[in-house]
Length: 279
Ligand SMILES: [Zn+2]
Image (cartoon, rainbow, N blue to C red):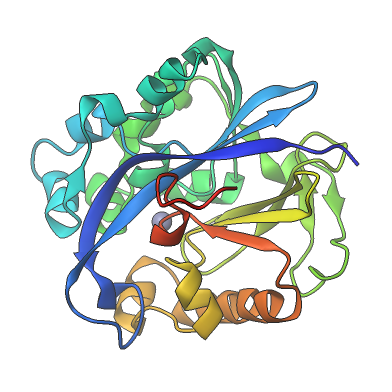
């Protein structure tokens, strides 16, 4: 099987009460990094899984009503911290990014899309159709910022749903299969429903075993270990509480029965690249 190299970047962070992400957690404000994974496929090249915050996000939320987004979750992003700037420092130009795989369309995941105009974007058609059906305020209410997707109104994304469906091997059989992005089994998009329309995780092997990027199916590794969801108010506001909890329970079982699988939530403080943890 084709193995992928990978590493994590942090493209800004936000703060909000920890209890909004994990029932029973303290009310104190906590840092939630916007993590992005950079993957390298031996023939398809550099791939991003999400893009974090960016200058475009700050522009898109500078005025009302979009500014409400930043008031609910205060965002911190220095100019040097954007993903494009960090990649440049590591010798990777924006044009070198061949693909961007989008877990879902919340502003903190698509914020940097416009920094990589040459990349092909792969996204769930369900997420896309959901966004198109919403008004500006209806989208904003659930964390979607249509202006961040402007350029893709003319350049049609690549749909996950058009990719071959594959069954997942043990220990992943509790999930409903995957969509094989490159047709070689190297990068599978796995639906993780409940958080937002068309929300997916990405499953691959880096040579040391499976890595499962679970995006916002959980806000932290702690919540997966404890099977502790956010309050129903939060999950019901963004998506479906029942389905979210079912997905989280599957991840909890996976973590318990297959601890060798690395589960990486997009906003987990334990996975911050400078937290001393190595991928
Ligand atoms: Zn989200």
